[in-house]
Amino acid sequence: MKDNIQKFLTASERLTIEKTVKQAEATTSGEIVVMAVWSSSNYPAAIMATSGAISLMLAIGGTLLLRNENMWMFLALFALCFIVAHEAVKRIPALKRPFVNRKEIAEEVEEAAIRAFYLRKVHETRDRTGILIYISLFEHCVRVLADSGIDAKVGKHAWEEVVATIIKGIGEKRQGAAICKAVEQCGKLLSQHFPRRSDDRNELDDVMIIG
Image 1 (cartoon, one colour):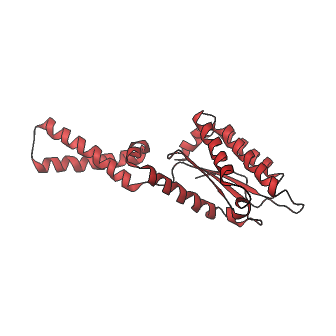
Image 2 (image 1 turned 180 degrees about the horizontal axis):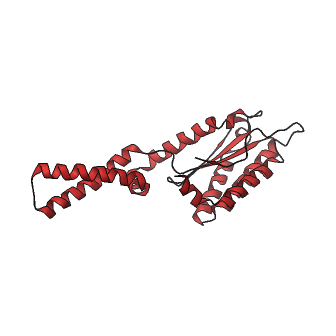
Image 3 (image 1 turned 90 degrees about the horizontal axis):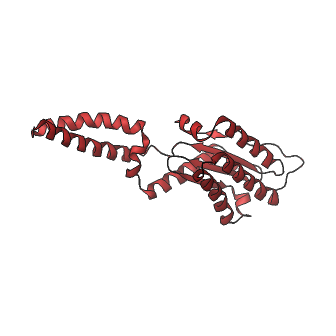
């Protein structure tokens, strides 16, 4: 699914984001990590439900078309259609979207963002000042996770503004610029509370993570 992310952000835009991260960190001891993934979950239950619904409609249509009301014929058509539909849904994720509810999306994105926060060691900076900007495309969701050091000094509203900046930019088809602006917002928040130290070092890579 990396191709989808590469369509979402061009190579030039990703490079610009990485440069912006480096510039934002130049005035602070904090660290900013930007991560974009196609999806936070495979949603297996939704795949099964979508495949089943498509197969049921096709099997009913096939039975009517063949004018054969034999149950075994229906089951055979259903099974064949299910195999084909299952593969199609895995390749075309948009098909399963109607079968994924908002609560499940929120839970999966939150869990994936927290997992990435720890796997990418955003929590291991010296002053606990790491910030993860997590973007999940399939769900149309953005999360900003801040470590305890900076989160204790910045209100929840500030992180909501960062999220809103990205969401608005995506809606206006200028996601690259919006992410850069969000990074700059995080940089300003960090520099206010954790200015750069004389012995500061880059604790986390500035390269944008593509999941």
